[in-house]
Amino acid sequence: MTKTALITGVTGQDGAYLSKFLLDKGYEVHGLLRRSASADVIDSRLKWLGVNDKVQFHDGNLTDLSGLIRVLQDVKPDEIYNLAAQSFVKSSWQQPLLTGGVTGMGAANMLEATRIAAPEARFYQASSSEMYGLIQEPVQSETTPFYPRSPYAAAKLYAHWMTVNYRESFGLHASSGILFNHESPLRGIEFVTRKITDGVARIKLGLAEDISLGNLDATRDWGHARDYVQAMWLMLQQDIADDYVIATGRTTSVRDFCKLAFAHVGLNMEDYVTVNERFLRPAEVDVLLGDASKAKQKLGWAAETTLEMLVSEMVEADLKRLSRHEHL
Ligand code: NAP
Ligand code: G4F
Image 1: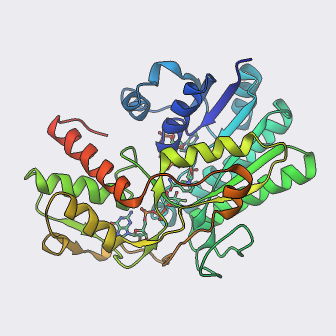
Image 2: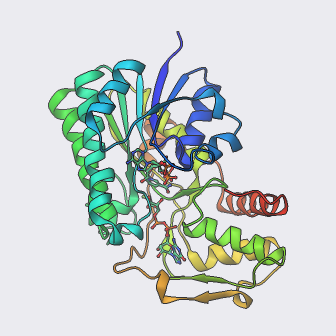
């Protein structure tokens, strides 16, 4: 029997990869679409993956509970993936209340709408390694205490505990995926990996002279979004809902990510990268390194894409995109 999924954040990086993954599995895929004046570009990621006309869109916003209830009543999903958020950490200091409202309360709205209108549906919450913040253990697992360092992380932590709470209080099949950073050619241009690969491609093509970055010493456990959406789905196929860390188990500095990206086109990063205070944060998450052994043992999941593969795929995609004057 065909399964039905509803994805919030369907126009984002993960929403696009998850849509493709579920459509390939034979799902009927519905997406929540927030109203935008830029309607002509809003489905550009789905288009890039060739699935924009296979997803059924529904107007809605995470901040509007009654609208969410109506969408759930219409769609009657078997699975709900709550991926929508104000997801850019740096912006969360400029817009702390909006971030709390969308990323925190928005998730609570989705849980509440599910409880009211689709209590039998399985629910996935997009939690984040950013919740570990000022890390309390050198390698972070499901049992590592959280220490959020940004309004974004505090909002995600609220959403995470609300997910656990709705599971324990109301018996919802609600799982929380604590995903470490995952990237792809569809990553937003404001995030550091894509900013670097786009910059490298511009420099190589003679369209730019340098890249201005912030903290080069921060390290992240970077994987590929395509691998990570599989883990989301696997969580919802389990009999019992639970929380899982999803990570590669390797951490790399922003500086070393840069070196790899420049090396891919035969250039040295030292000749092109400058540091600008503008890109520093009021509080930094210095290191993230995940232990995904629970996901490996219980879900049979492990990251397939190495950092080298990810960097080369992203640089190549940006070279192609810029050569064709395409934008994303
Ligand atoms: P993304 O590319 O920034 O996508 C965010 C999505 O949320 C977009 O579709 C956006 O719509 C939508 N959205 C924003 N505000 C909304 C609102 N008020 N109502 C409805 N939709 C709204 O994020 P991503 O990288 O795909 O990440 C997916 C989720 O995983 C996010 O919750 C993020 O915080 C979390 N996460 C990401 C990572 C990572 O490394 N990528 C790691 C851990 C957790 P528009 O297109 O209209 O802007
Ligand atoms: O790419 P970033 O902006 O990602 P960040 O802050 O780690 O957040 C991402 O991953 C989280 C999972 O841990 C998600 F929850 C969240 O939604 C998002 O997807 O920054 C990565 C690192 C930071 O330490 C930052 O200070 O790169 C450093 N950095 C150095 N220069 C920069 C820059 N970040 C950005 N965005 N721009 C720079 O110029």
